[in-house]
Image 1 (tube, rainbow, N blue to C red):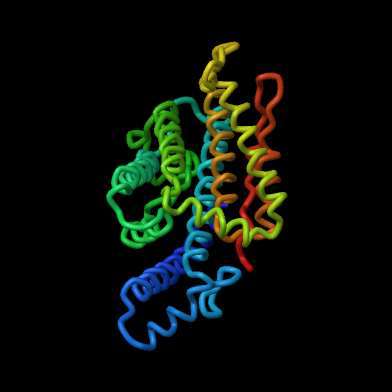
Image 2: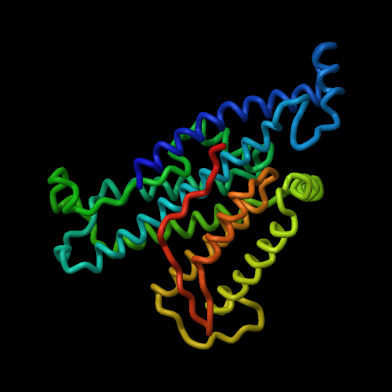
Length: 304
């Protein structure tokens, strides 16, 4: 799992660096054409079709796709860590009190701190979310880079018991990281000036606008059902108090849907990605005030 995760994140880092440079260069030419040749290129590319500029793909669309791909990868890694931790923590094979290596816990704390810092600083940055993220990721490669959970037994003796923290303490750290990731997703909003333009682009580029719109409505409907479970919907009376584990499961289901919503919001989306959204949503089932969630990984198809 984590070998694939690291390889894919590195792959998209390379795309991000390239497309950020192209996006910023293109903006510079549009705003301040420096030469006659640049003015000619700009005029020829004023009316792009099918997300091309002068016969080339819009670099921002590819930059956004790389950003969304890394979001999806990061969520699968966080989800795997949490599921793996819960399984090992509840297993009778785990020695009571063995806990988790402190250095692993520190890595998750760093993950959360970097995300929180990004959320706080983003309003003061220039550009859309994928651009801001790309610049920060280049300068701080650990941003959105999920560490791998390893318990004490799997650490091959590199850590002694005195350097461990309890499973309960690590559980809190991991849950805080997941909560901060949700805040990171919530803060990813389109600016008012970009909403109409982005909507038009999505309508033109979507391979199946009707199916695309259906998935958006289905995602919103399922989100309302999940919010209903935890009593967050306005005017909703909570039927029963949820256990902490149930609240975490609902939160993770909401993150699943939030990730799907972000994929559906991309300016460039493929048929395969639309079907991925459908399958991802099907993993979260809600009925009679209860939720069932399939936590198995499902990777967003991105390679052309």
